[in-house]
Structures are given as structure tokens and as C-alpha cells.
Amino acid sequence: MIAGFDAASPGFGRDPWPAYAAMRAQPGLIFWPEFDGHVAARFHDVRAIAADRRMVRNPAAFAGEQECRRLQIAENFHDMPFHERFVQRSMLDLDGPDHDRLRRAVFPFFTRTRLESLRGWTDDLVSAALDRVLPQGRIDVVADLAGQLPAQVIGRLIGTDPALARQMTDWSEDVVSYFDVTNRTDSRKAKAEDATRRFHDLLQDLCAARRAEPQPDLTSALIAASDQGLLSRDELISTIMQLLHAGHGSTVDAMGNGMDALLRHPDQMARLRDDPGLIPQAVQEMFRFAAPLPFFHRYASEDLTVCGQDWPQGTRFGLLYAAANRDPAAFNEPDRFDIGRKPNLHLAFGAGPHVCLGNNLARLTMETLFTQLLARTADIVAAGPAVWKTGLQAHGPLSLPVRLIPAG
Image (tube, rainbow, N blue to C red; front, side, top):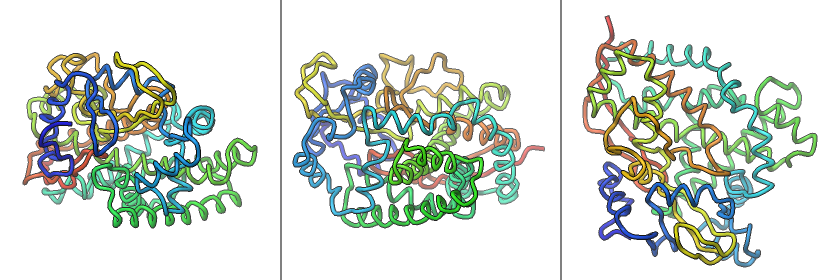
């Protein structure tokens, strides 16, 4: 790996970009002993691995039960009954026909056309949130604004109780943070298992309510698909659970990263105020500039050649999406935040079979927030130092204090 590289350090959480640049400068793929795999940091290498269907998330695609169990224990993913049943067997960690089958079941709810029906409701949600925080003047963007919105939006689509949004966001954080290869402690393990159990109980009750009285939401649609034999009961629960996990934390992080980028580049914030039509491009640039989900893994399901090298079956790869999105071989002046950047074919949402299903929903929520936030303020300035998440699983501020100066 890189000498002195410590993804768990506060310094890396705050500014990972020099380490990523050093990784891109190394030839080939970098072997990381603690990960027991090779890491790709350049754009074309990351995209080639992510887009290759022979690259899988789950070793069950090529390994026997005994080997899968060995890998599970090595990752400390064992002795977690609910986590093993509903997280480790979710759509995210399935491959091939099973993954495609579950993805087809939920895809109609995530098309751009379908999600446009949420735009008016999301506008009202953001407007109410700004009505609440603007009089305060000084707020924490994460705790007081961004942290309140994505759970409400994905919950509206799925059909969960809005009053539980904050609680579900905390549970999601406990589940998702345990995927971080740099900090998989027993205390985090216990939190991830407990949060998964609580999610299961909540969703079991939700499914029972929707069976008794169906609604025009994703949960009711998946129940109908389950009744037709298209997915099992466990797959029903795990799919809803995964969508909630994915729809909560990563969008909060993206909002925080986007606000931080605007604060660091006041010329771009002014440009966006002058031309709100750039909002969709600006949101894409926010995702490229600081990807909220920097790191994912794949396994080679067979002997194969990729990135100019031969690899044996079972080789593990780490994909540094965040590093790839700052690769000068793929982007002109990649360390420059440019809200008008075109083209902007970044990898923040991944690539290939596991490309992020909720990317349209995340962009809609971000576009709504920044459109209203800039329209209703004359200026936004930093009001103190940000505190950043550590590790490779997520990148975003834990706290981002700002001062909002209302327009007019």
C-alpha cells in the first residue's frame, strides 16, 4: 500500500486526496495486506473491474461452503444471525441471476420518470426544513438539515413512518459502518447486529400492515411480487432494508460534501446563484469531487485477465471510486471543483451490474436542497471547523457548522 497510509486517521478523513494521488502514481494494482487483496485507484482500472460481470461481490459465486465460511470468519462477519440473514444476503451482495431478479423487482420505482412524481413533495419537505433552520442563522448542515432529509424521501417511496426517519438513519449508520475494512471491531459488530434486528422487526410490522391494507408504495409492490413467487420473504425484508441503508447515509454524506465544496469555492457558489440552471451539473460535480462511498470490493469468479494482468480465481480487488474520480487521465484538472464540468462521467455511483440503483433519487434530493438553499440565502459561510468521518467506507462530514444569511 502507501507508506504511512492510515484510512482510520482523522487526517485522512479530512483530506484523503494526497494519499489517493500517491496510489494512482504506483504502477499496476497495489497489494494491501490488511485487505488481503489488490487495490485499484486509477479511473480506467476501477471501471474495468466494476464493469466486468466475472467480478462478483460474493465468493459464493465461485467458492464452496467451507471456503465461504472461512472468508466470513476472517472478515468477522460470523455469529451475526440477523446480519447474515438480511444484510449479507441482500441484493448488494448477490450476483448473477439472483441479483438481476431482485433488481428487476425494484427498478420500476427508481426510474427518472417515476421519481419525478416525488419532486413536488420533496420541494415541500425541503421548504419546511429551511423554514425551520433559516431563522436560527447558525446551523450544523449535517445535524440540522442534511441529516433530516434523505430518510424522509426514501421513506416516502418505501412507505415507512416519517416519525421514524431519524431512528432509521442511526440504524443504517450502525449497519453500513461495519462494512469498513479499517475498523471492524466487536463493538461495531454488536451495533450492526442489533440495528439489523431492529430493522427486521420494523419491516416485518410494515409488511403485515401493507398486506392488510396495500398502499401505492414500494413495500406493497414487493409484497405483491413475493406473493407471485418472484422473491422470498427474507428477500422481501432484505431488499427493503438495503434500500433504506443506501438511501440514508450516503446521500447525507453527499449533501455535506457538496456544501463543503461550495464553501471552499465561493466563486462556484456565486456562479450557481447567478445561474440556477447549472444545479443538475453542480450536483454531478459534487458527487465526482468527493464521492460519498469511496471503496467497494470484488472477487474474480474465475481465472481472468484485467488491467493488463492475469489473476487467479478468488483474487480480491478493492475499488477506490473516490481516487478514480480525481484521476487526471480521465478528468481535466480533476482537483478543481467546476460546477459546469462537461462531460462528467464519474464513478461515484459505481459501474456495471451493481451500479447504484438509487442514483436518480439521490440527485433529485440534492438538486432540490441546493436549489432552495441558494435561492433563499444571500450567503452561506463557514462558522467553524468541520469534523470528518474516518475510514474507507464513507466520506463526509460528521459536523459542518455554517452561518446562513437569508436573502432579502
